[in-house]
Amino acid sequence: MQERNIINGIATVTIAPFLDFYDKMLPFLLIAIALIATDSRFGVAAARTRGETIRPSRKWRRAMNKLVDYICWVTLAGLFGDTFGTVFHIPILAAVMLLFVYGIELSSIVNNYLEYKGIHKHIDITKLLLKLFKREELQECIIEDKEASDEDKDNSEH
Image (tube, rainbow, N blue to C red):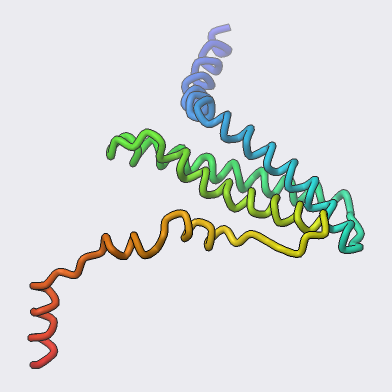
């Protein structure tokens, strides 16, 4: 009886931090599962439109690989949120990181959907993000240090 209590105590102390960590990240895991299912649905439809044969084993293997990838991304985002987010007081760091990763998956979903519907266009997520953040405005934030540039000129002359 005492051995069972010791084993249960050790298991609780070992597993509780993981459960607490993933409890916060559960909504993001559920979003990942929904995105994987949607991408699989439209990916299969797009493949049928192209005339490809769909092997169920490959479809499930790719879905499981994506799930493992997303578990890794959710874990990484959660760790970044817990470490850097609390230190720099950025409470939404994990969410921002995952929204970027999920944006890539959303791009894949939309592109597969467009191909399935016979629309010959696609979305480039990097161009979309650059348009959202407008590179020109970002370049205005970068100011050349006049003293450093003068020193560089002096050093290049020697």
